[in-house]
Amino acid sequence: MKVYKHFSHTTPFSLAENEQELAEIMRLKYPKACSNLETGAEFFARMVEDVRKFEAWKVIGFDSFEEFCAKELGKTLVEVEDIVEGVRILGGDPTEAEAKKASRSARAAEMVKAGTHGVREAAREVGISHPAVIKAVTRNKVTSKKVTKAKPPQPTIKLSDPARTATNIHAKMGAEYCEKLIEALKEQVKHDPLT
Image 1 (cartoon, rainbow, N blue to C red):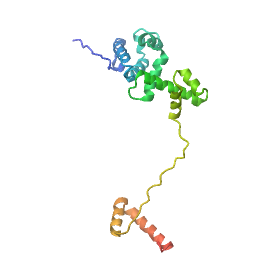
Image 2 (cartoon, helix red, strand yellow; image 1 turned 60 degrees about the horizontal axis):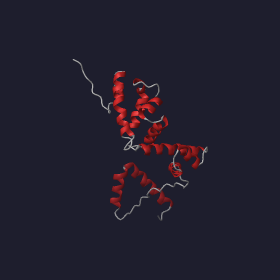
Image 3 (cartoon, one colour; image 1 turned 90 degrees about the vertical axis):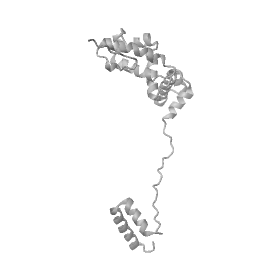
Image 4 (spheres, rainbow, N blue to C red; image 1 turned 30 degrees about the vertical axis):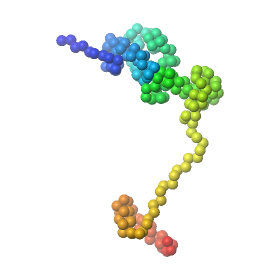
């Protein structure tokens, strides 16, 4: 009895037991990944990372990953890497355009932060608008405002009903805390009897 395996575009590359199965999964994945780029690039990014990781481009006859990108995906290696990086930066399922813009903005922001380029220079070099670079540069910048911690709330003890207050303190803080509190209050009374 011969067992036939059924693969789809959702089948992980790791399930392939040989090169023939890897090639079959590959041929199912990349058309589906490329067809959804206008609405979401997350599947494309995962597929591309797996193609590179499993070197699946070899089993369908390409000499390099770059050649696979150009001939099979119709994109340059830089475009593919921009999409993958943009998906990583944005998370979720951004469109191809959103992913590319996020990746290029991040690359331009790094150029500005490193001091090798001005905002406009970096924007021109990576092909995005200079407001997008400014937004990327300021996105991760820590403000120079002084960070202050809020003071912890100070407990107030109203002794309108001392027995109830003592019961609440004992229930919430425990017997050991109550003993220390009593000792501290006794010390305070010794030093300043008017309080």
